[in-house]
Amino acid sequence: MFREMNVEGFQRVLLHTDDASGLHAIIAIHNTTLGPALGGVRFRAYHDQQEAIDDCLLLAQAMTLKASVAGLDLGGGWSVILGDPTQRKSPHLLRAHGRFIARLSGQFIPVNDIGTTQNDIAEIGRETQPVCAYGDPSPMTALGVVEAIRACMSIAGLGKSLRSIRVAVQGVGNVGASLVELLHDAGAQLIVSDVDEMKAKNIASKYGIDWLPPNRIVLTACDVLAPCATGNVIRTSNVSNLQCRVIAGGANNVLEHASLESALMARGIVYAPDFCANAGGLIFLSEHMLGHTNQQTIERVRTVGDTVMTVLQMSQTLNTTATEAANELAMRRLRKHSAGAGY
Ligand code: NAD
Image (cartoon, rainbow, N blue to C red; front, top):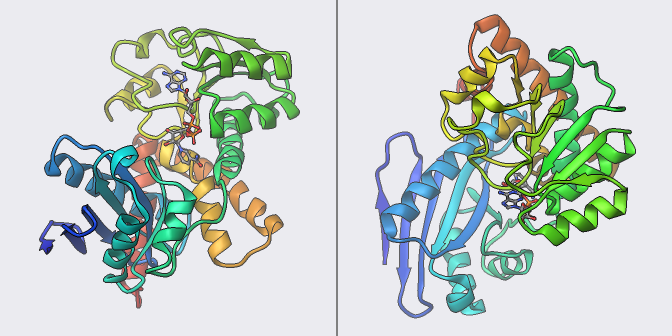
């Protein structure tokens, strides 16, 4: 059964339930002004359909802003499959989702997210093209974060050299571990943490660096705090006790709520909006789709630093937060293109 919902601000929101395969899924296309909407396929046991719709809409909208501010010719969309992937995932169901995506005639390009793998996307790709399964984007996300850190450091008066700069990395999974390697090579002084203590200890011994239990990393004294784990890292309860000069990392939704950014500014802490700092992975995927070389991809990912610098300077000129400046930059590009032909 297919149902199309009218949601203000979204181009299309589609619901699909398919008894034969057990598929219960949603696709939200937020905006394709700049190009087809690239977005994740999240397979998760939501409490109910409304929670799944809300998640899908937020993520789709965020993709539009992220692609636009990164200067990519991509739009924003997202897709969710409801259910526990460990119980419900099957090739049959994934192919049904592929046929659902195919109804959008290339307007939505799926990539793996929580609960799906690149193999799952390849399975989906048996029913619809294009799909995005080009390898792990995390090293490029980390490279973009390094450039975001440099831009923030420069605004914070710390210069651009990472040598001897003390960086606290929260979470040493795919992005965090790559970030540690890059920062270590650049001569930074590192301290790491992970809820999986073995991971933190292994990375610490590999590079001869310090590690901290997870409850201590956010408030540790450092030049740069790099959140690379989950969201809601900066909270009302900890913002006044932070001891860093810069916050830039790979994690999404770093701030518990938007108003905390003003509190960071008041304390002189330079914050790189998460969707600008962690755009390297999306740039990597876009470059692959365009058939660009590794070297071209690396150069393009390094522009994350320029974007963050532009956003921070705009925030100073416009007297806004960096996130407001980033949103404005994204909207300007969308307005400019929607005046033209669009996708
Ligand atoms: P991951 O699951 O590989 O790594 C996350 C790590 O954080 C894990 O080792 C986990 O044990 C640890 N962790 C969780 N909660 C923690 C806490 N409270 N304190 C310390 N450690 C904690 O994920 P990833 O792919 O490295 O992504 C990290 C973050 O970056 C996520 O928020 C993700 O949404 C975001 N992100 C990732 C990419 C990418 O290319 N992978 C791109 C953009 C954004």
